[in-house]
Length: 290
Image 1 (spheres, rainbow, N blue to C red):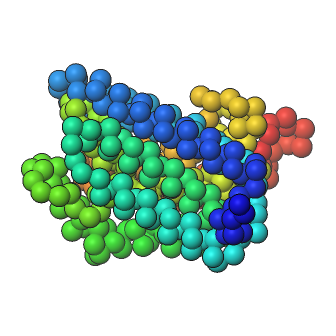
Image 2: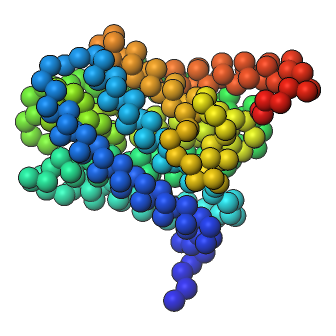
C-alpha cells in the first residue's frame, strides 16, 4: 500500500522521528516520576525549584538531537496542511480524554506530546532560513507579537484565568492550558505549567538554524550535530535553552509573568553578534571550531 507524497518521509527521517517519539515518551514518564519525588519536598525552596527545572530542561534538550539529522525534502503545501492539521488534532484529542486516577500520567504525556510537536514545528520553520541574517526579522516579529499579546492582547487575560484556576481548580481548565508545557515542581504533587509550546518552538528554531550554518551553539563541547551523529547524550547545552531557563528564572524570582520569547530572541541576537565578532578577529591558526 502506497501513501500520498504529502504523508511520507524518507527512511532516514522516519528513523529520526521515531527516535524523537521514543525520547519524549521516556521524558514524559520521567517527569511523572519526578513529580512523585517532588511531592515529598514539603517546603517550597527557590533552590529546589531551580534544580528541578534545570534537570527537566537539560534532559529535554538532549532528546531533540535527532532533529539535527533530518534530511531536507521537497514539500508541498498539502504536506504542511495535512501534518499541521494532524498535530493540532492530536493536541485537541488528548485534551478531550476524561480526567481520572490517571490524570497526572496523562498530563505528563500531554507535555511530552507538546514538546515533540514543538520540536517538529521549530525544525520545519528553520528550514526556510536561507541566510543567517533572516533570523533577525523573524525573531523580532515573534518577540513583538508575544510582547504585544502580553501587554495588550489575550495573554494578559489568559494569565489571570490560569492563576485563578491553579489557585482554585474548579471546573475545566482555561483553553490556553491546552498548549502549556507542564513540569514537576517541588512542594506539590502535580505538574505545573511552566512555559508554552511557542517558547520551545523558538528554542528548537535557533538550534536548527545554528546547525544549518555550521555554528556551534553548544556551551560545553562539540556541536549538536556531531553529538547526534556519535549518539552521545548528556553533553549538549545550547544557548537557546539557557536563554529559556534565564527567562523562566527571571519570572520565578520576580513573581511576575514575563513572556519568554522576547528574552530568548534578545539573548540569541547578542550571542550571534558576539560570536560573529569573535570569529572575525580570531587568528587563522586558532584550532577552535566555529
